[in-house]
Length: 115
Length: 114
Image: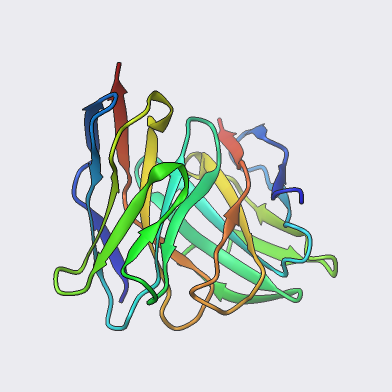
């Protein structure tokens, strides 16, 4: 079974631009979560989607948004990019949504650099 | 609120010697705890998870962790380090409300000396 895939793997943008990242979960998984990883803040939860609905949201500004499609694929969008948005963005999928015990499987991440 | 504290930011061991990565958790309820590993420029891979079954949890690649409620600890161990174990290790606790989000520790970088 194929793992979680994320595209693109690397992105370079300039301040003020917007960016869209894509995540394809493991087949059969319906929950997709997004995380931001930076050297200063570590790994932080952004949001989770299930059945095309945002179920849970972390403490990030409204510039960060996402959506999920009927095939469970998810996209994350960041508008008006700031230098501090430079990070590794990780997507994770799980089978049983809303269950804290369920295992999340992570993709390789998208490395975003904002200049 | 749930949180985890990884007590060492960097651990260095010689190849073939035991590994101990320390983690303490804080949770109002019985938590679900995980250890993930991240190799350079790679995503996170699950090593093992605790979900209130056996307190000693065996994971992949010879790693195991013991859940100790009295000490609020979930330390990761391995009897004999291998060069391929060099990576960043994250102790993680899940949201006890049932929401599908994870709270990560700050990570421990493991260096294995040949």
